[in-house]
Image 1: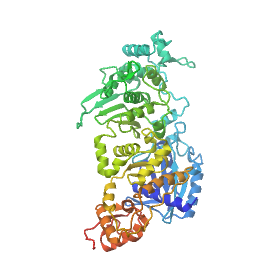
Image 2: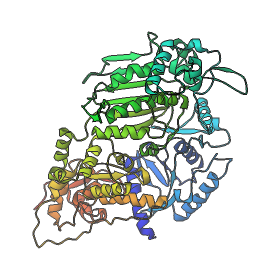
Image 3: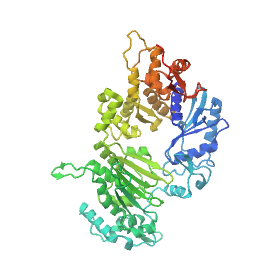
Image 4: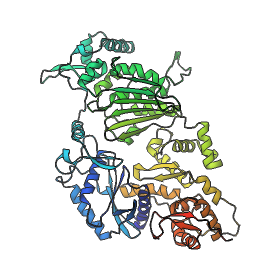
Length: 630
């Protein structure tokens, strides 16, 4: 492998990281005064217990900006050994999740650094903690950095390690069948009989049916018997539920366009039996009410459900099946004209990538899931997320977004209700990209529409929207980056893509007819694609997309200094980085940094944001009022 190519790619990637500063998935650590052992261990724990992330050692902060610290190659090799000794010492860290490919060394303008990619730990592996006491050494990540988990958070992680996770199977001591709402059980039985009239359980007594459903059981070892948590939540009287779970609450709020206060609210106020079955019967029709039902026949039978009906129902059932009911927060549903949000307590038991990929699921409350499955409103094959995604795809809505919140821990599923290919979206794309938006293929158009209406898109998200293999999606994304329509950031499987909102301004300034005798003196930035068998390869291959996005299409003709000054000053009406200017012109950053920009600064046409620095990787430039001489 050509190390210079690897380092060039890591250089570009580090530029991206430092531009984004520290986030939920990036943490910089200084190393001038020695290996930052304690800080690295805390961040390793927090990333592993949340959604993974990248630790970079050898970066310092100054006045809110991040710079390479000047570590030598020898020092980095020394730190690498210290790190591996630390991460493999069970007295310092509970578990090593890393392989050699997760640790990468790099160089940035003569400054060396080490990059550590921390994966998300599985449910069985959490908590990942430092020291030997999980209650005093378990961390999680939030917007402000690493925070030490509370005792109850750690206890819940430990309780979720068990192989057969069934948190709704516990017997609720002191509760009997008298704590159930008879009407809820009667209505459930009727739905079950209507759906499965020949099922062996249809003629069973209520008690026998409850036993089949795992709503009531007897512990063979202890001899205890009674209602399970699942039975109480699904069929219980509201007063009985809150006696077992004082924090239990359902809160549904609906908002009209332009209104900040809800127009309709349904919550567990004691006026109705707010168990899960009644919540399902009462709230799902309200959520599905906006969906039209086209006339469609399957044979001679009318089909009253579309894929979006099924997707919304699956999302609603997941909302009831996956919460951590033992926590101290409530179940919330928000319905606005543009979106529906399901928010429930707990953490994700699978990664976001697994959620979007479908086919794999871990259920906290399998008995509740079985109860919904038996009346035909839930899946148990790991296809729930697929059903949701397919429904939104058929409706041409923007893709659902799942996220985790911390302190307290919550999982939120956002279901957009806006068409991804509406007239307004097409108008916005035309405003940004002109006639180029009219020449996009259907898959490219859908990708751009999603990138415009979502915070970002990724390969895993697009797999649910495009009828393409993931490798073909990668090719499509890189092509859009090369054309300057998208800009990529991140690395590996975490690479995301956003719209290049400056595309039109770039083209207005650069796509002018040139004199036929002009010759090119620049080459497009080299796109480096390395093998993806390790983190270095993943970084490089995805940074290749970043590099590709800086190429403004085909090789450009040579421009004289005056013309370049006019283009750059028009573009730099606000502060712009070298990377942004290079993207606009399709030139190499080195050419601009070493030749054009210093001359323009000396001539007074542009000014630097950091006056005393000539090497800052985050230097920015802005046009002055001085007129350019012809």
